[in-house]
Length: 78
Length: 223
Ligand SMILES: [Zn+2]
Image (cartoon, rainbow over all chains, first blue to last red; front, side, top):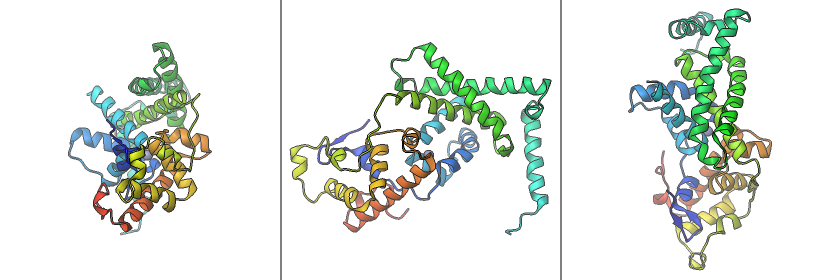
């Protein structure tokens, strides 16, 4: 859900996204490289962390959706 | 130790092959151009179709006018594209996950790309490096605000970013153009645009910190 910030014409989500700290840097290709192992690790242990990958997922909407979709698909397979 | 011997590489390769054999005995047959290989490729395409269908249906809200048949066509086409991609990159599978998981991510990638491309096919991609994009929804009261965070952000967008960084950041984060769609329109790629966005965010954060808005920065100021 986005909330409009009438002062700037930007929603609070847009402001947060513009100012997000996306360091440490990880490229979309590197994210894709690691995504399969990450998805399996998260399903095995929801507390699994991979900081650079998780920062990328918080900073890149399309990669984040792909990660969610992969985890969902693996969960469906059981 | 920084020395990586051929032996270590050999062990990794052997481990990858062992992983294929243990998890998915049919995977090794993908390289066989004859009978067994054809069956393995068909099986792989089935896996990829499962992933592209899952992804296309996950994103169907982006295609409100598409019927079930249209979505299935997209999933089938994406499965074909994913199959080509997987077969081309078979050697890069290192056994860090199950082969099925590795293959699925190609189905997810191509399924998503197909939906986004279709969704944006007839839409103009807003490419402005002007702040009018940002000001579009501003209210008179908002315009009169002087020294608050919003004004600081607008100033930082105007002053701290290059025109290219501004165009990319505004298109991706304000206009919500998907990164692969934007890349295609700009003749670029996801990596290059994400790097531009990363640099733009760093510049905006640095400017906001300079302006004394450190406490307002999401993710802390030192990460
Ligand atoms: Zn990404």
